[in-house]
Image 1 (cartoon, rainbow, N blue to C red):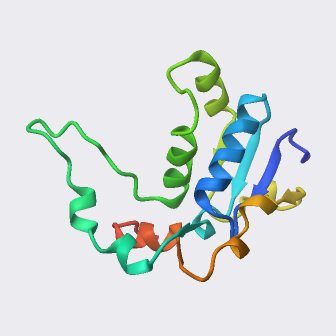
Image 2 (image 1 turned 135 degrees about the horizontal axis):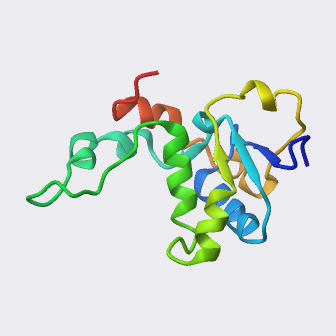
Length: 144
């Protein structure tokens, strides 16, 4: 635990889906979690296959442009991935999602805190085929 009573997880080199499922489970147990370095989280797969359909990905469907909307910031992409693994329409899921904070880089107030990693979600499990969430975000229009 850090000084703020939150667990700080360094997402540098962690696989997005595996990290999200583990974090979602911990949030449901009542833990408060800050995730730092969200732009360095990785998505497994071939780079060109992931980013090739950028225009189609960003299209908003339907006549009245009601969605789906896609976030462009890396911290919002990671946050939405974790939200998808929570029962967000139930009170316990909404409360759990409220205990989550995701940051780009490391904010000043968390620099001194002890950061942990998730060994089950580490990049070493992949065989070199991955792309970072920051690269995906830049490709779909994130302006740093």
